[in-house]
Image (cartoon, rainbow, N blue to C red; front, side, top):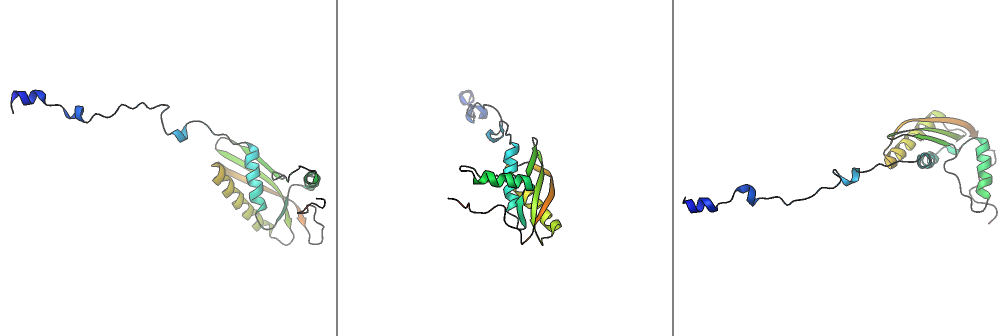
Length: 157
C-alpha cells in the first residue's frame, strides 16, 4: 500500500456510524406510569362473573335484595351488579367477599368452587391483579315455590 492510500483510508467505526437517537423517558412506553383499579371495578367484574354461574339465584342479603328491587323499579334506576360483592384492591392483589343466594337442589360446595373459578378467571384476566381469596357466604336458598323477588321485566312500562 502506498502512503497516499493509507492516509485516505477511513476507519470501520466511521463508516458504520449509528444514527444519533435520543431516548426520552427510558424503557418500554407501555410500562411508563401507574394503573390503579378502583374497588368498584373489581366488584362489577366479580358480580357479573358470579351471576353467570348456573345455580346462583341472586346476590346479596335479603334486605339488600329488597332495597335493590325497589331501586330497580325507579325510572332511570339500573340493576346493581355490585350487590353482594365487596372487594379490597391493592397494587397487585385483590380479595373478594361474595354473598349469594343459591337455587334449591344445587350442591353448595360445587357451586362455591365454580363461582370461585369463574370470578378468579374473570378478575385476573381483565385486571391483571392476583386474586388471593374469594370468600363466599350463602345467605339464602331459593325454594321452587317461592315467588320471584326480582322479576326480569318490570310490570309497568
